Length: 282
Image (cartoon, rainbow, N blue to C red):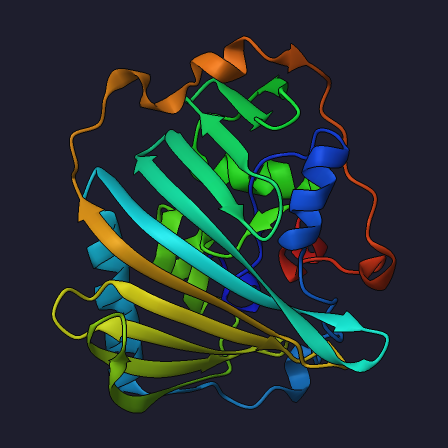
């Protein structure tokens, strides 16, 4: 997921209406991080070789296939007026065909939403309201993710898994990376657990010991005074699946009532929330 400071916070797609505002609220960006220290004051990064090797292996595993499918179960905490946060969960079925096709079907706590990118247009569809928005799209998945966040502040917490160069995205801005240990409690397999740190984020990554695919990403944003936790579990990996030509379009969406894209209003508790990625964008 792009730089580690936003590995869980790259944008995908654009909100269309109140139906999509609900979806945006369910996957909104984490709180703004505090300003990074000046470069002159920075100590040398402390990057353990084993942690970096695992990140390289994970990136290679993700980019070795021209297409892939997986399930992403994202859990995030949302503040309440009584103190302890509530937890909300979404489940996304993701299909990717590099370099320019993507399908995400998301349900869970909130209304179902469907997103299609065919290399030329991006479509966002709300089945329960039978509303659809379609817009011209950039020529790559990375560019779509970037542009959509700028326009609508919506992200998927697994977005950096989709990028053309996950290793570059994850390691940019690292101040510390270290190996935590192995685990047999995540993803139904043995995983190697690493932690990565930037000025904005502390995150653990569980990486399959055999296939090197990411199984869990868990982050806390250091600029968030509540230190709310964001977690995504990745499962049901399929590498180089057979992909039907019509997989990145929807007949139901094509027949839905068309409305224009519009950026959603920020929820009151997250009015100033934004991704660090957006703050660094030109």
